[in-house]
Amino acid sequence: MADFPSKVTTETSSPNSQSTQQGGTNFSGLAANVTTMVDISFIRSIPAILMMAEMLLGLIQWALIASGPYYLLPAYSWVLFVAITLWIITSILFFMILFSVLPMLSFVPWPLTVMVYNCVAASLYVTAFLANAASVYPFRLTYFYSYLAAAAFFGALTTLAYGASAYFSYLDWRGNGGNAATNTVPT
Image (tube, rainbow, N blue to C red):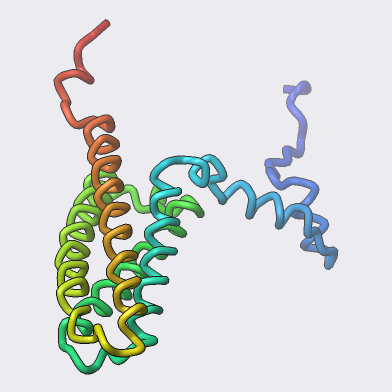
């Protein structure tokens, strides 16, 4: 009984947390916490490059349409709705993946969710591209013809980017436990 110490300390704090509690500021600790939250390897991946391309091409498309008289044809309202909505959702999803928010929401089947989102986005962008391309002709003699034709071109590129994202998210979904029987076979 004499070997047992009379007072036991079970404190598990680090020296950095004590310095910040005493009024000191520790910006290096804050920077370290932020950089550990950012998934740098994601930026270099094909899905991230495709998401950045979708955001850039979608932004160019709706900026070109918004610079013209889009209110004259109802089809351009649909194109703007699809382009702006998918741009916002893709941006949110991109930053959620970049800042590692998805593992915190583990109750959502993210590979399946991202695959369904990309398939729906590609389908919506096909309809928006076709509406955009079909609505360019009435403006052929106006100043805005080149803007709307360029918007149709960027809509086609964005459609291809979403299609490629759908394919790669399908591969990710199938590779992430798509077949439970292959994961339970002992080797």
